[in-house]
Every structure is written in C-alpha cells, then in structure tokens.
Image (tube, rainbow, N blue to C red; front, side):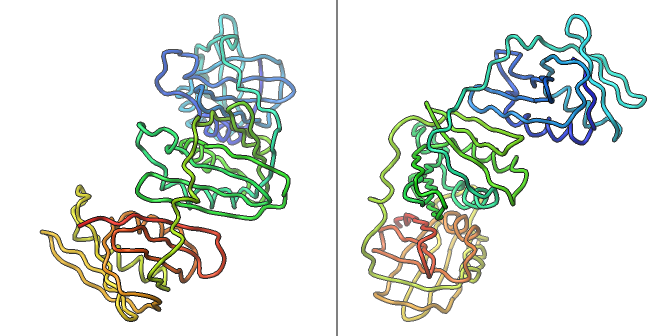
Length: 365
C-alpha cells in the first residue's frame, strides 16, 4: 500500500474513526485503525459495539491495507507539518510515514485479522436532516439511564411511524420525549440505540445542512452520511411503554417563561451541596405566583416568578438537576407545566403543539 494525502484530510478521518476504537482490548488489533487503499482511501475503527467507516480523499499509488495503532498514528499525524503525507507499507508490516522533513517508520499489523463491520440491509430506511438529528439527540440524551442493571434504559428509543419520528429517553426518575414530522410516511422503525452511539454520532456529523440516512436490520443500526458511516449494535429487550406513564389528567397548569424559570432554579441550586442529592427545591404555586425556594446548611434562597395559572394551588419538591437539564434544551420562550398531585409527576410541554414532553418525578419530603 502506498498513498499520498493532505494532513488535514487524513487527520479529520483519523479523528472520526478513533471514536470507535477500543482503548483497552484483549485483541490488540481492535486498538488500531484499518487503512484500506482501493479506488480510494478508507479508514475503519471497530470496537465490536460501534464501527465507523470514513472515506478520505487521497492519491492511491499502490493498493493494499494495514492496521496502525490508533493512538500512535493519531499523535504522529497531529504533529506533522501542514503538508502532503506519504504512507507506504514496507516489508514485515513496517510502515513509512513522511511529511516534508519528517520521517517515521512504525510497526503495523496485518489487516487479515481485522473484523468486518456488520452488514446492515436497507430495511425501513428513512432520512433526516443532520442538524435536526443533532438537536433531537441533544434534547433527549441527558435522560438516558446510567444504571447497567437496567440495560434497555441506557439507550434511547427511536421510533418512526406514520411520518412521525420520536426519540424517548427514560432513567426511572424522568423522561425526555421529542417528536418531529418527516416526509417518509411509509418508513417504520422501532429500535433502542445505546446512548454512547448517539453521543458519538453527534460528534461526527459533518454537514448539518444535508440529510443522514438511518436504517436497521438484525440487531444493528446504521447511520449513513455518504462518505462516513457508523454502525452500532442495538440494545435488546422491550422498552417501557412511555405513552402509558404520561399523566392524562392534571389538576394544575402553569404557563411560565422558560429562561425565568431556569434562572430561578439555577440560583436556588447554588446553596445545595454538590455531592448531595437529598436536598430538593420547592415549588409553591398559588394565584399567579410561583415561589421557588431551597434551604440547606449552606443557606436559603427564595424567588418569586409571575405565571399564568389554571387549577388548584400546589406545593411540590423536585431534584433541581432534572429541571435544569430539561429547561436548558428547550428552545421555546414560554412553556406549559402540568402538575397532577404533590407526589405525582409533572410534565413540561410546548404552548403550541406536541413536539416535546419532559416528565419529572417529584421528591417526597
């Protein structure tokens, strides 16, 4: 194999596929990046859970392939001059790397033992704008569970049906739901994608104005951006019936400015010890005033916000972090909050439409 490529293109490709490279593996080959020169240069990273394939513009002088340690090749290319880079495989898998006056000779591994990425047939394919996908992940990923005892909740449910795409994350204390209409009314998909996969796909989205194709088969999902593809194993099991846990009846409705509420909760959280989860903040709603307060050994905070209220007065307490996480990703100027009882969940919704629902369980005092 012998190729010439600009440092910029090569480094961009390495940075993308490195996100799927295992840092500690019993298989040394998985700590490497596959360089495969055919009609063009393909880089592959694969930790057997996530695989990323990226095509890089390069001049192919001799076809071939080699696996190079991800950390070493990344560090070398990152520190090379901003110029053309020559990579040539010599005898015994030794690899020459040259750029202007810099010359490296490093050991590679034969590509024969490198695992292929799973084949994913184009079943249930649909397309979505890359920027919209990024936003939908951002607005739901924070509610993915970190509890490995309930592995199905460590992922986000992606459901596509009747032209509507829905993302749902639940960690047992809160739920984040985001909906969006798409053009393809025929596509049907229901998969649970690991949170790690979605975090990584957001990082490698390259052109936010273009579409990304998503399709799934045989326990895997593929995100196709054209010159870059990510394939991931799906989480197995039955996801919670999220529709059944959303309260249908509410006794109090509040319309409030999103930024005003976020600012008040963030200030109330300032006197809560950072390592303590047992100090909630209180919401007291009466007339058209919401009183937000917290009281710990550090100090006490009390704020009043003007609101529009329908229904009964209520006094309820919450973990401030759950409200802050939701409010930070809501782009609407005002939102409606629905309360059931002082021990029941509340839901945050847009004033118009149903593009999102954030449900938060209260803290019993």
